Length: 240
Image: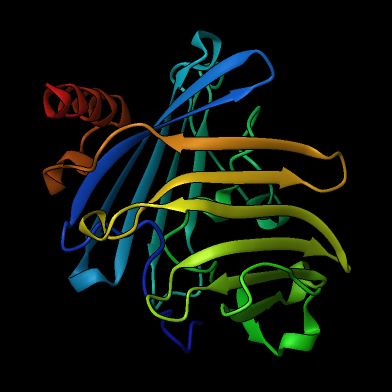
């Protein structure tokens, strides 16, 4: 059960209750393109987040759907690939891993820290280097997630998460960094982020390639494929 509300939601977009933007990256020689869509409800206490894979073509139709609520002890994470009959729920430690065939982490997409994590003392988490003036925030897993730690650095003025480490039994597995933040008019939504897998040394940079477009809230009640098409059309109109 969450006992403390974070300073702000990750990837917030000002007062917009529902919005979207596009992201691109290159993994090896493969250009990747994603659509990010989010809706806040219940006066900002619940969030629905979806990521749609648009490129490469072999992954088109893949998506992740995340349902969160600040006062809940659980959240729902489902992923779907075109080869599946139906979306499957992401469970336990897999929640702290990456989407299939990409370096995007489930944890890095969420609006708030995962509810399976509890606040911990700073010395309980592996050390983290980064911005010297940033606030450090540590979380640890319990029960089946014992040994999992997440360490974050937040900007002291705005409470933006700019660095995140995911570790298991003291070994750092993944690192997420916001390399460039957006303008104040964009609520400082990151323009560039980097994800590193520390064990393999693999690194991927992601760039936001659009502005923020508003969406009707009820669009998230439609099938994911219809939401994806609406996001793509809204981005096309917004760019024209």
